[in-house]
Image (cartoon, rainbow, N blue to C red; front, side, top):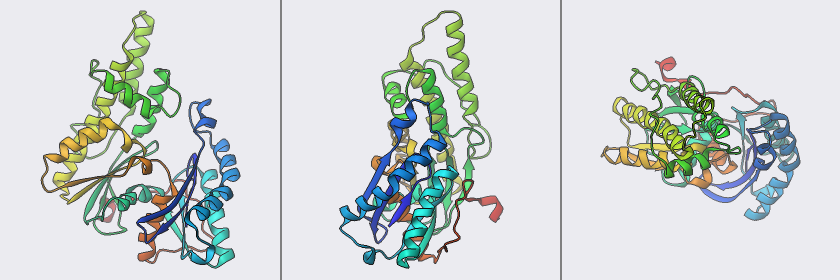
Length: 336
């Protein structure tokens, strides 16, 4: 059994052997947060409280299992919103204690990456590009259960930038899917900056792109010029995708691996998927593994996949497990 409650999705899943989904119940809160233009932590926590036991019951019913069938319980304990995380952690600890079941702490980002186990076996070493609302990272995995960051965003995550740009375009939260659809109908007419593209590292920055987008639209408003929204979306997305693909392909030169995993909520973006597919097709030694769209967003199935890996590495927790909202992988350079 696995739990995910790091942000605005309450999810409970039953996973068999870390790679077969027996059930994956997700209670979304999107409609509740739309009116605020983003996730409100207190609102998210209250929804988790309301939904968590319902999700447990539904997941067990769909999988047709009892607590006697559960070998371990995996739960996201970070990173994320501390109040939201605490609901999942508390529920998981309670069930683990009440039924004497081992408890497995899982890093949310590891869950996103290891959702690829539902697609194929991971061959190590492997590289993952994780792109979501709160994270944009390149993660090197030399072996199973080992995660080291070789590049990350220094400011906004790509998903954050999509939501901020979406508000200017008049799109409700979450803006990513709509911006992606609009981009497909437009062209890169504004040539927004590709931040840090030429720097000798694998880090990202999207705050400058966001500022350039806002300055362009504000200036147009001041002079009463109407800009094509599809072209704005296409120009923004091109700038994001170009940097993500360029940095990733450069990382593959320094860290050659047999598999590249694309994961995270923004991994469902059609523009990014298409561009990365085209780039990886030119690298004969690397296979692109794309997490299925239905598992790109936050869900407990991915936590179950990660929990299985952590259990194999003998990573367990006690009832003193607490939420860690700032949890992150180590940098590769820290290891070296």
